[in-house]
View 1 (tube, rainbow, N blue to C red):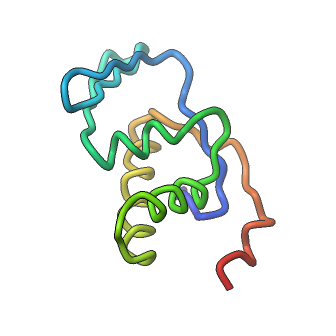
View 2 (view 1 turned 90 degrees about the vertical axis):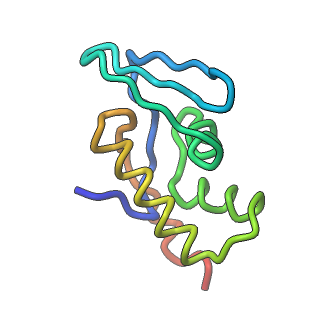
Length: 103
């Protein structure tokens, strides 16, 4: 199941991460697979502290970058779904109180 703007996510436990030059490397301890992200991907990854709302991440990016909300949502959701598919993040719940925001 894909993430929605109302989802709350966390980084999965039992993984390692390190900043190496301009990129952040992450490794799933269970699988031994490595992943790397740069720039905007780093900003998204670093914004996931504890339980974090998907919409909150998008709001942070909109405050930091000059980007259209629709484009930011599509690209951020795509990236977060990739992280979810690779087991780097997990969905821990939803925040339905966000459903009326932005109107």
